[in-house]
Amino acid sequence: MSATRKLNQDYVNNTLIPNYAAVAFRTEHGGNAATLSGFSYAGSNSSYSFGLFQYDVGAKGAEPAQNFLTSIGFNSTQLSQLSQHGGLDPAVQDALSAQLNLALQNPVNQAALDQLNINRGQDLVSQVQNALDKIDRANPSVALQIYASQELQLRLMDYANQYNLDSTGAKAYMTHLLSGQSVLMPSGNTLALAPGQILTGAQLNSLVMNTQQGVANDEMFLTRSVA
Image (cartoon, rainbow, N blue to C red; front, top):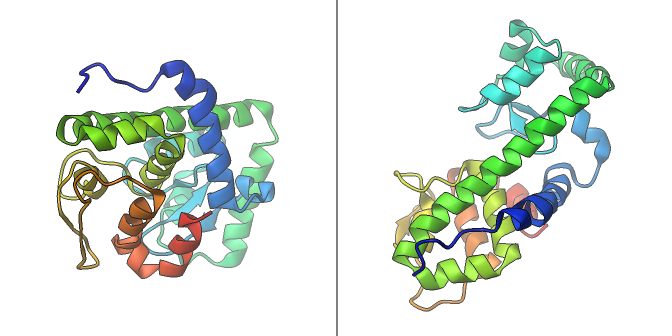
């Protein structure tokens, strides 16, 4: 195992992140550009979200998205409304979406959102790299497959965008699985990779479908997993 194996930064900046942006546009927005400048609610444990990567306004770690909204004119009351787990009057949601759409017509505000997206893309790659560092130590054959496959890298970035790709802790399901451990999922199923197994998107999808969100929203996540 190489202690210095890393994703190439030029590849990350010029290929991987732009390609994941295209994946997010397809999976999060169905290719509909009109949804980029409004607020939506996906259900489950989420709050209202916006933007290319569907920034969840009320989620843990949402400070960059909240700070962006504050910088373009949203007040604390509005942020509290958007941090709810659903329940907004449709007229209120529409008004907040219209406010966002209008603000993004200002090139300065759009540039700030573009920078937020760049930062998020780099954060997702960092999550993948941190997980790969651990996987490489425990299960180098799987790490090599991921390093060799842009498809697997993009799937892991998408997982990170949905759940966070923790490299340690009780909820580091994906990292534990790819490191060769048996993983007891919230669904009650235990997942494991066979020794020497060729990793496919299907195995990653299986893990997604066994998360709490996947069980609660199986049709939505199955559609997303094959998009």
